[in-house]
Length: 302
Ligand SMILES: Nc1ncnc2c1ncn2[C@@H]1O[C@H](COP(=O)(O)OP(=O)(O)OP(=O)(O)O)[C@@H](O)[C@H]1O
Image (cartoon, rainbow, N blue to C red; front, side, top):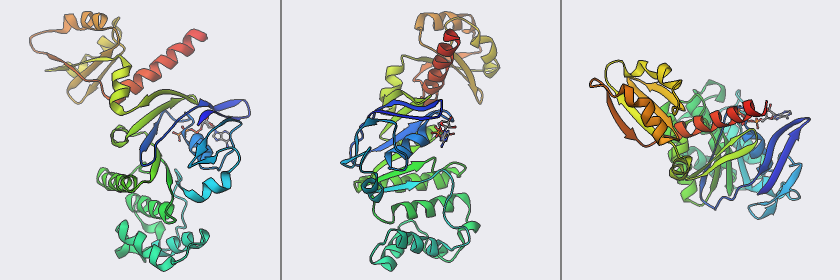
C-alpha cells in the first residue's frame, strides 16, 4: 500500500498510510482509540474504498478489485457479529452457506475440531463466555480458508489463558501461510506479532519488529527498587530530562531520550535504600513516548 487516505467529512481518519507485509507474517496495528486502525483494516479488506492511494492486497488492486479481495480475506470484527440465538455449529454452517462452500459438513467439522469447539457445538453462541465467542468468531472468519486474515481487537476483554490459546492458533495459521493483520491495545499481543505498526491520528509513527521499534526510539530507561521507590514518580516526572516516570508495583520506571539529562535528574535519588539499574525500554514506554511527542507537537502548533 502507498499513500492511502480516508476522510469522514472534515475528519482525516487515515493519512498517507503505507505498508508492505510479506505472506505468512503477523503484523500488529497499535495506536490509541480513534487512531484509524479499524478504518485501515476495512480499506484493506475491500469494505471501504480509500479516497486516494494505491496498492495491492493478495495481488488485487485495492481501488478496483474489492470483490476479489473480499473472497480471499477473513475479517473478524471488533464486535461479536455472529448469531447469538444460533448454536456454534449452526453459525458455522450458516457462514459456510454464505461463502457457498462445497463439502460444508466436512469443513464445519474441521473448524470445530481445530478450534476445540466440538464438545460445545450445540451451545448457543449467546451463552458462550468471551474467550469461546472469540474462538467461534475465528472459526467463522477462517472457514473459507482465506489467504489474509484481518482481526480487529480480537481478544478485548478475554482472559489471559484464552488469549494465549487464541494467539497460538493465529501463529499456527501464519505458519501455514496465512497473512494476519491484527489490531490490539495489548502489549503482550504486540510482542507476539512478527512486526508492528504504531498509528496515531491516521499516521504511522513507528514500524518494524518490536526490537526495531524499541531500538529506534532512542529511549533510555532506569528502574528504581527499594522502600518508597514507587512513590517518587510524581516528583521525578517534573524534573528536566525525565519524560516518563511511572510505578509498576513497587518498581519505579523512569525514561527519557537525553541520557545526560536523565542521569542528572535521578542523581539526587541515588540513595542507599534505592537500587537503580538501567533496563531496556518496553514497547509500552515507546508508545507512551510517541503519544507525548504528538501532544507536545499539538501544543506547539496551538
Ligand atoms: N463511518 C464513519 N463515519 C464517520 N467517522 C468515522 C467513521 N468510521 C470511523 N470514523 C472516525 O474515524 C476515526 C478513526 O476511527 P477508527 O475506528 O478507524 O479508529 P481505531 O484506531 O480503530 O479506534 P479504536 O481503537 O477505538 O477501535 C475516529 O475518529 C472515528 O470516530
